Image (cartoon, rainbow, N blue to C red; front, side, top):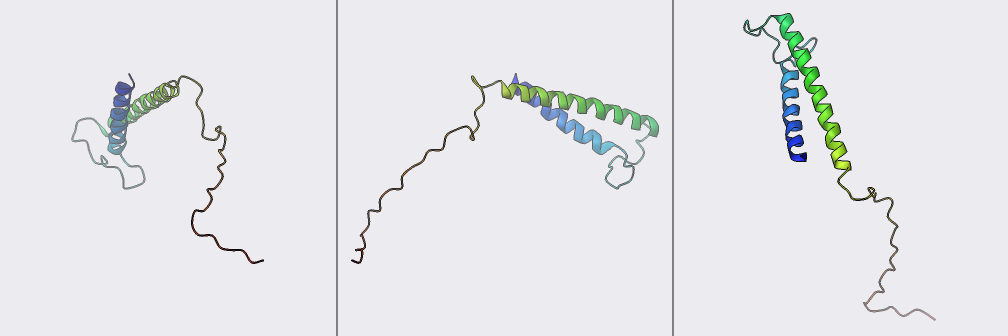
Amino acid sequence: METVLLLIHLFLAIALVIVVLLQKSEGGALGIGGGTMGGLVSARGSGNLLTKATGIIAACFIATSLMLAILAGNTGSGPARSIVDQPVEKTVPAKPTGPTVPLAK
């Protein structure tokens, strides 16, 4: 289940990047699909189509993100433990085994 959802999430991320890059740039020079679409659809129609596609893909991406987060939170048998919750173990340093220095009297 998680693997299938993760694959869908990956494909949605790739599709979202492609659809965003195809949109016409409104002020910068980063838009790849800024020119004509070769007569496939009109300029206004392609803008609306890409805008709607971006919204739908983004909503699906957020939904799969939430589902993956919920599934990841439910994998443990008990409450999740943090490293902060664990007690600190105090250890006594080992005695040196090398030669000892005589102390002055």
